[in-house]
Length: 204
Image 1 (tube, rainbow, N blue to C red):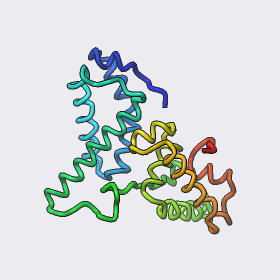
Image 2: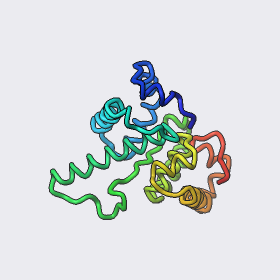
Image 3: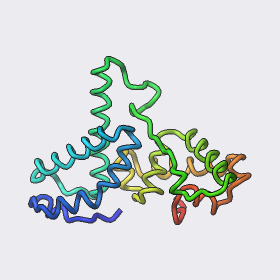
Image 4: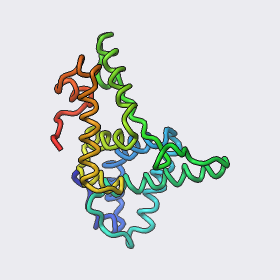
């Protein structure tokens, strides 16, 4: 994703730069945050804390290679800390079945997909069920890559993995969807693109 603001303007504390930063990335951050923690108040508070931290520490922050990746990773860290704090307050451990302590909710929006017929809704439900069978990391990578249009190196930075891991994990997820017999009965490659709500499937 191409950065929409100049980091030097952020460091200088220019009000219009911070306004531009928020306007350019708030939708991305809100959508991503809600996939990690399905609580709007928590996500909005985390976004506010993120921007306050940037403003306070701006002169000590190095220019990121990607502002989008930097913001997403920073927001994720805030949310994971909140999940950990909530678990401590409630005297319960984080879900041991989740390697990163969180799930990734990739719930597709049937209305945004412009599903009209009963048959389309049925196929959409099948596709949604298959997405639910992917690992949370696979769902997260598909979301960042194909819904939000982030580059492989940006996703690698956000998830703290190698670019090769992003390539392999994403390919494995798409291969699993393509090879599923139920999906194969309904969907060709073009339909898979439609269901992923993307204009073009990059061959990784």
